[in-house]
Every structure is written in C-alpha cells, then in structure tokens.
Length: 201
Image (cartoon, rainbow, N blue to C red; front, side, top):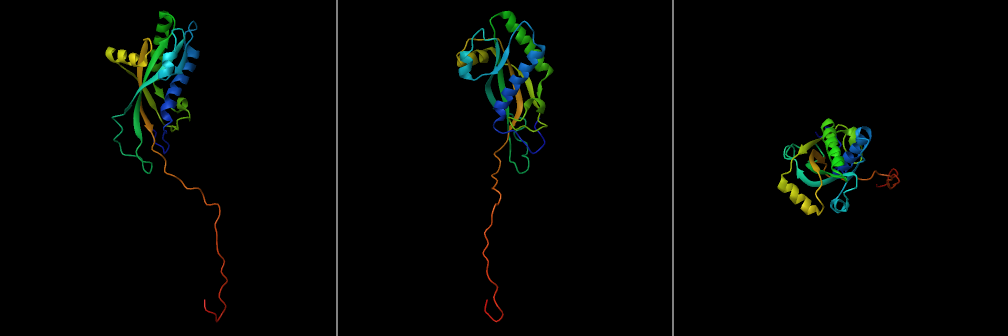
C-alpha cells in the first residue's frame, strides 16, 4: 500500500526494491538457511545473467518486466505533488547451483521465506529509494506459462535454471518535485535624503 504522508519514492525506488529483496534474503539465509548449502542472493541484469555459472552458488534476482498497476493508477493525486506512477515489478528468482539437491533446497527455502515475510516495510526498505515510513510493498507469487518461460530464457541467452517468479505490487514513482528557489541572502536598497521644508520634493 502507498504511504499516506507527503513523502513518496522517487525513480530510485525500482533499484531499491531489488536491493532490498536481495539484502533481506541474504540475512534470512544466514539465520535459517541449511548449513550444508551456500547461497548468495544477487540482483542481476541481462548481461550478468549470461555470466553466471552452474556452480555459482547463487540465487539471481532478475527484473524481467515492469507494468503499470491497473488498480491504483487512476486514483486522485495527492495535493500539490501531482500524480505518482504506480508500477508492478516482476522478478525472476533463478537458482545457480551444481547439484539438484542444492537447487531444490534453495527453492524450498525461498518459497517458505517469501510466504513468511511477503511484505517489504520501512524496516526493510530503508532510505535509498525515498520511501515513506508507512510504505508497504507486497511480494506475491506469479505464474509464467511454459511457453513464456521458454521465451524468457531464450531472450536471456542463458541456460535454463530452476526458477520462481514474484511480483512486487504498487511501487509508487513520485513526480518530479517543483523547483524551489534559493533563499534570499542579500538585498540592495537606495538611500534618498529627505526634502527640506520649503523645497520641492
């Protein structure tokens, strides 16, 4: 849900959400992940996905799609700030491990962790994206058809990996703030002598 205060996330919110997810999952893995399996959670772009190897011991978070949130984009704008742009972020979580056992352990743990903590709040989001303290972003499971999944991996040019898809809903991108002028630091005044009695002004 969007925050109700005057602050809204800026264009940095998109990258901040990915970083938040990776940081949260990395910490949670240290606390509750299986001790026999290593896994690092990393945000990856297209080129970086191609560079991953089967033995990378990583879960890659790849933002493969961004869509406008159809339920909130037509709501009235907040006063003075203009209309924010609500977007949904579609993430692919892919597992890069050298054995089926490790892949499946990470997948099972990931499903459980995102079901236990599906909401990204101020405690997780931090300040990097400009989120308000009352912001709540929900991470929900999504389904890709077999055909769409196949096309996605073909476009990435990487070998298929076991993966899950999730959507982070209703990330509000704030409009540009109105320009504020610099405060006045000096003034210039002209002094004029007053006219004497009997003289014309």
